[in-house]
Image (cartoon, rainbow, N blue to C red; front, top):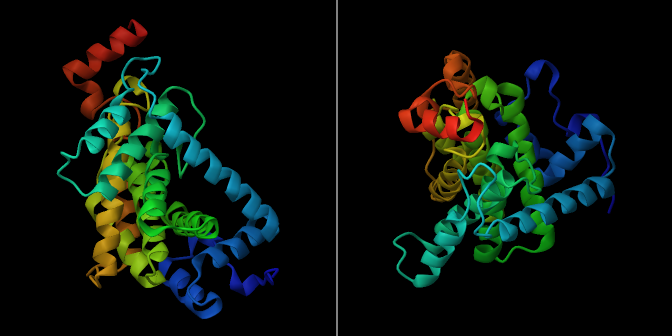
Amino acid sequence: MKLNHKMDSALTFEHHSFRYKELVEQADLDYQGNVAELMIATEYELTGRERDEVLRLMHRNLEVMKASVLLGLDESKSRSGLTGGDAAKLDHYIQSGKALSDHTVLTAAKNAIAVNEHNAKMGLVCATPTAGSAGCLPAVLTSAIEKLGLSEEEQLNFLLAAGAFGLVIANNASISGAEGGCQAEVGSASAMSAAALVLAAGGSPFQASQAICFVIKNMLGLICDPVAGLVEVPCVKRNAMGASYAFIAADMALAGIESKIPVDEVIDAMYQVGSSLPTAFRETAEGGLATTPTGRRLSKEIFGE
């Protein structure tokens, strides 16, 4: 059935005004809680793309994500030598049966590392929402497919819902490390993943918004300090942690736990914190881990400076 696109049934972002409160209310009122359908309508309003084209493009994104997880298990190193092989190590460890963490969460961490290692080797990834934070969403989705047995339609809905939640962050805070630190990149990616995971598990849009709260509150102030200016250290492992946070946040939300600070106020705080970060902590490689003695040495070895 073709969606009847109506201006008042899609998200509008005039003056960055659209908030999570409105997203939750509109999804419940117009789409019986189906955030994916709301996102399709929004995409039509923003780009003019019809439903079939939106689904086709999202299917392509899904294919790229799944491929990047598998290809990232390669044990080879990146050109810089900073990363590579850790996803394979974690995969072997999981298979050993000695892991302390839950299989689903640890698999998500492994898959996140795989995607970002693949990115560091110049492999094709889907920026969700950025290349540096591309591991979280594919990792959470692939683990959710295994855990929840998601159909292809449900997988596409997962991605569309994540996009809707991410769009609100992008328009009210930031998804750029250069603008808001790593809280804007891995923080946003983890939050989007957590929200989509809640919906995939049968939760409500409101519960999804609470999962966003839990992730972002934990990520507030996370700096962007790439060693040698490359999206490898500490980025790869931060994606692994972001994927694991998504599962914990989703479970907390599904358990009925609510944030004392409303989600839109959390996003406002995210914007304020990101704007207040010194330039050294916003993707410039002039602070944090990038300026440790080892960080400087590695940069010199790579670039000869």
